[in-house]
Length: 341
Image 1 (tube, rainbow, N blue to C red):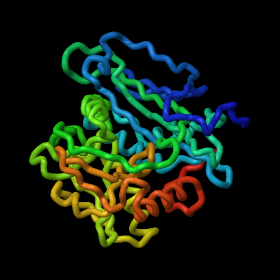
Image 2: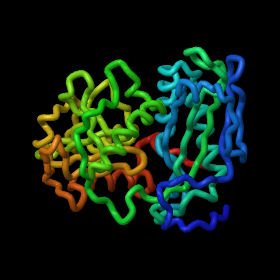
Image 3: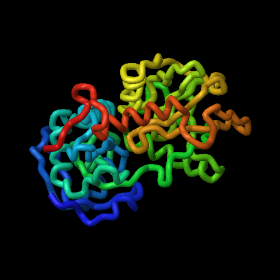
């Protein structure tokens, strides 16, 4: 298929409408078969549950053109599993992960002309989401829902190269124990907007949220998990029941152990330990790893040894290995790569 005439190298991380998206409706207690449509605009009731009580969840993943010209996605089954868990927690009907993966593959295939070429630095971002479409005025779950998947070509998250971030320890709480921090609910991201806008006004790139119960343990940012590297080369990530189980983080931890031979550990990480780490990174779908050079705790600066010029050496190896797997330059573990045919 001939590619669209797009300046692939000039793309930002913004929405561009593509030709097709997948839509399935839940009515009368069952999911309809669903299918592709060229209609990107929605018309919903003013009393729809998503508008009244924010009953919605979403996922994010990417499609890539590999070095040998194939179009692939990365571990979409884990995104499907995570959406199942989000739906259960929000009293929404589960869209089965097998159907989820099929919808993702069909949508990417239909928009093949929008998948950026290998070497352009761009990818096709995929956004599956679900929302309550039926009217509801009392505080209760809706009776009707819609599941959709759309795609948009995006450029690299960091234009002009990766520069380490300066983040602050936030006074705001991201998620409470036994709350919804472990699922990808839209409401989690809405409540983080004030904190991130405020951080930017104060000259910081992101927030570091602590646990809401004791405010002594590191959790995550508004949209990414943390990975730390100790001075003796161990890769450590926070363990908590109120942070999102990042697919990128899980993949990086596997890569660290199985590909790079590094010691790994998932455990509680205390704020007091931050000064002892050699490297820090924020990990997620958009950028894979964003290096952190400085953490500010109410005026006290923690300057990581990796500095403010580039990724630390271990972070760089993790980034290069995982992106190499995604782009087909390095052999992937079984089941990680799904080819669009």
